[in-house]
Image 1 (cartoon, rainbow, N blue to C red):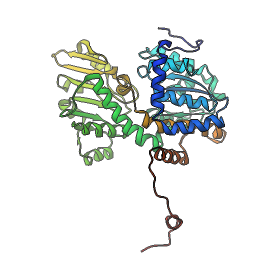
Image 2 (spheres, rainbow, N blue to C red):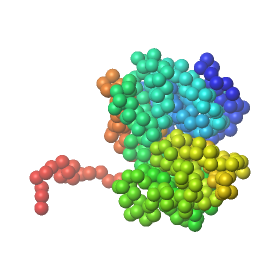
Image 3 (cartoon, one colour):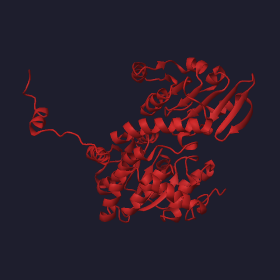
Length: 425
């Protein structure tokens, strides 16, 4: 596989997969009503005319619809993968062949190819960056600082990326403004909770064909993603155990009806372990040493650092792959531990990621945040900004409209009451 592709027009697995990818892109589109409305306006108004966008995202059917929406708005878009295992090769092929959007992404690409694809996307000389995990911005700041003067700003899709970008801003190294799409209510309350919840269960089941009912499922991290996975696992009959470092979140998990304990205790009784923390080495050597034979371990956080895979490799005396996306490690004492999806995002490595209906809101936030950035970048400082509240609220309203759901509106009397302080008992 090539390790340098910066002079190529695209790099995908096989353009002959395009016909299948186009059908799947069209299938997802019918579930993305809000993005479809935005696309219709973009097509008429062209608010992104001539703007060069480099997007480092999971190359899925939903991402394809976002890319097409940006192009309809007049943007010149290039896409690369934000994870080596998350690309849907047929979708990548269709974006190139059917929609004329350059893509640099191949499922299973090695680390060198992954970063060469990022550099290929940056060779586009973007005015706007679009990230899922902040690898694109990090590469700009470490290897392509010459691009900074032309970059207006960027957007960030996920929790891990926002954490990295805030660290950059705090350290004074962030060179342009970023909008934290992840922090929008219409993103993390739905994408992270319902999207990650369902798609992580989907990934675990597709990889293993395990019945969750009756299993001890250990959820590491009780943020919005952890909440979602815990909720869906419980709904399928699993006995959910939560591990946390944040006392407030741990207390929430207890009051939501789950058992809470340290990982050192959970390791001895868990059947399935899923990390959703955004931190590294959440499951470590001492935990592997305590696990029962047959334990299944996987990750649904952005990077493959949450599970200490090198430690598992060192403990193992042999390794085999009994199923696709399942690596079975045999330890010296004969116990077997199964790692799913190489420790990468299990919902994208073994499944298809979040359902289109929930990504509709996330990518509506992306599209409208890019439009906002293009209009307002010169007024913004080099820091991380929230999605403007009016955009967040408009997306929620449009989503309800698309579902045929109406809500009440405040009367003038109610507005006045909420804005006053004089009325008391």
